[in-house]
Image 1 (cartoon, rainbow, N blue to C red):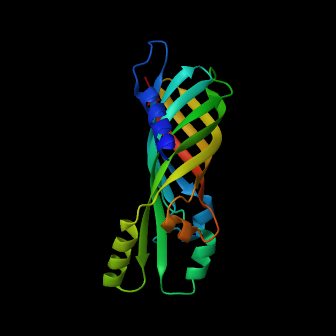
Image 2 (cartoon, helix red, strand yellow):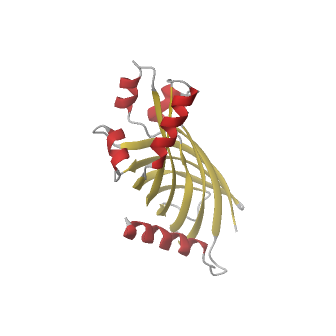
Image 3 (cartoon, helix red, strand yellow):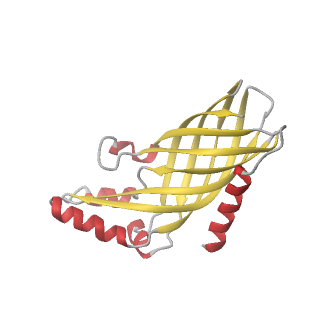
Length: 206
């Protein structure tokens, strides 16, 4: 875990370091919807993701970046199905920080396909409702007293569109949280804590 955190911090430090005048730095914000939790739209497990990133062009076809954001719901579908027959509704969102590398297929073109890989750390935020406001608050407080920081890995791809200083990013992301704590292992019930995202982002280059 310490090595993973150190690696993520190293990538972020490279991203925010001063760059040569010929290189470019991009700042982007994004939002996304989780395809594996569309049924919970409007519920307490609202599957909307958001965040931001800073990226740095190492060479025209390679970017390194640091990203911070929130994954709206990582609760395994098996557990959600089981709880559907009870009064209890347990949710699990995750705040995360990660570093990654992106490869551009056509870096000098206005439209370029890309693939990327990431690694970082996620912090689960747990919620519960259905037993009454007091009981729900007590359960949420108890759950979130447990350390739920776990390794996070991801891959993705999409299309990057550029017009002057403007970036528009449309793509797919898969993120998996590796159960490293007792609570996240219990929540996973033999399944992975993961997310399939469709993402849209907008940013600027300097």
